[in-house]
Length: 243
Ligand code: OAD
Image (tube, rainbow, N blue to C red; front, side, top):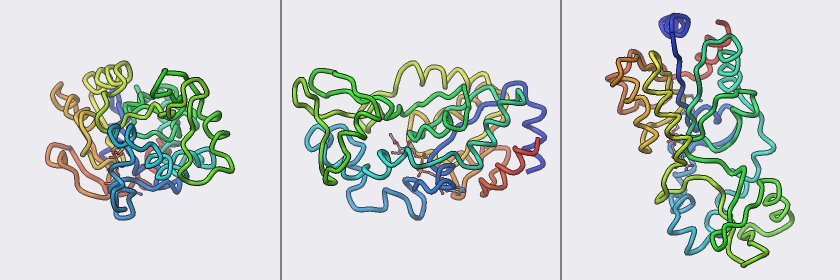
């Protein structure tokens, strides 16, 4: 970790890419870790746009606690450490694959949500908009497979989370690419680096001559090109918070 701390201190433009692993420290399950959501049968259907259009209750049933229980979760040590790095002027920005809005809750201000967010939902029929809290209200007291529907046309509301089969939010992804390509140091935190194009962001840093550090319990495909791989996110959070 001393090497990573030294790189943070000496960085000119520090970028971070976060994934679901940083939120397991807050009690939110990840996708592909040992206790991950995708260990359940058919779980990959939950965030699949074709399945959503066929049967939106698959998503609402699968995400009832994961997404609509998010209001009960608070930022963890990594979210707080990144807010600290921003406060001391050492962090250019965060690209996150997470949809749990915890970086914003921690107070970080430069956050690019490359897989979208459930903050807004849109009707699949007429595009009508509903907020996260409006959807939570519609779900209150309903059974697990209840689907909130648009009062105008009766179609299902879909969160602005990027599902498999959908394009990434253009503006957020372009900003994340710029952040990655202009970073001299990129720290990858708690992601399996398996979902593209987000997993290609650290490659953009490498291509422009920057250094990549990885903190993740499991190995990743980019370990060989990284300066170092550390397994422990908590150790990272402690080291970064003490800078
Ligand atoms: P994954 O679940 O694929 O990867 C999370 C990684 O974090 C795993 O490799 C874990 O081993 C590691 N991890 C978990 N807890 C950890 C801890 N306490 N310390 C160290 N490492 C830990 O999650 P992502 O890479 O974020 O898409 O997944 C990418 C995308 O796949 C997600 O954004 C999601 C999913 O489909 C959408 O939601 C649209």
